[in-house]
Image (cartoon, rainbow, N blue to C red; front, side, top):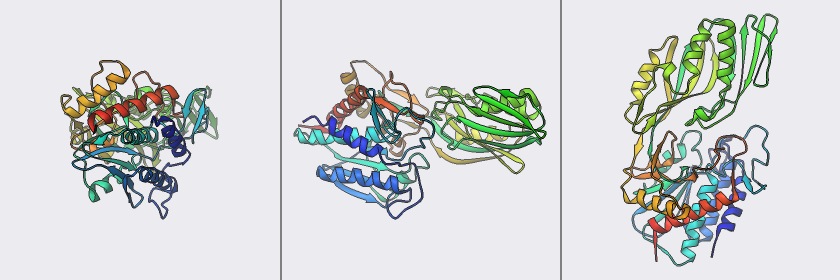
Length: 429
């Protein structure tokens, strides 16, 4: 019995729940929408005979089989879905595409994995391990869900997270979200941009004492009023691990300020408007890839300009050295790491990597190899875990952007890859 249609129906139901972190409620510290998602997957798992546990609204796990624990780790929470979408951000199928916040990150992939397991069981396959699906409720805003899980529950021996890219991600660079306090230019009245460190800023505004050139552009406007210049800029969001794919609105404002007011603004432009980290003295590269740096949140706080950076650093670069180099930069008054993940690596010759890679290549018809990313997935929560999908190399990346979507054809292929992967790594006749 092919269960793709049921997986699609379940995904649409999951998308209908707004699971951006909200006010704590009785069912979950992360809000009612997260609770609804967690309860939904628990219900579906129990319908198919899985043993489940509702972890105080932090997580849900559902398992089947016996023996060593094989984990499939993902999350039900999402980033916000602001902006004008071409379809309903809470789920709509339109023009052969599935739209919705979480269809790729990470509701859709986790549902596909779970239903692929349901299908294998119905076809008479038996799990060689104790297969456990772990659904977290706080991946996008702090990982408190998976931290709670690891404190209270059994840690999988091996497994994967469908929260990255195909074919297989066996190496993830380090992540550090760092609040850097710069000396505020005396003429800067306000500066506001960004909601999450791991999203490229697509809307920002600033007010500067003094009269700059008036501008009425599509991406930047500047109006002079009562001796002050009011600036507004827009850009394009992207995931903080790939800032080069976005268009940071803060860069436009600093570019305007540097041109019209010079001085400290010109220095800030050189420091902040650079996704390689070169402007802040932290650029680096090794076998895992190059460092990236996203200015994700900008605010004025008293006499300090606070900039929250999302830094993805190479595996041989220590987080402490990044902090030390930032502290040495001109105008920097404070450096505070708010959130971090150390680098993660699994050898590409390991059976887990080879099994997943073989499944992908068999379904897609390629000879792809594993690779490294700057993103942080739940694979890091395991000593022996990798990220596996859901993004295909040919797909347009809309994760963390408006109009997050997947074509029905790609979504079906994703389901088929997860089915084949679980059959090869977990199940047997």
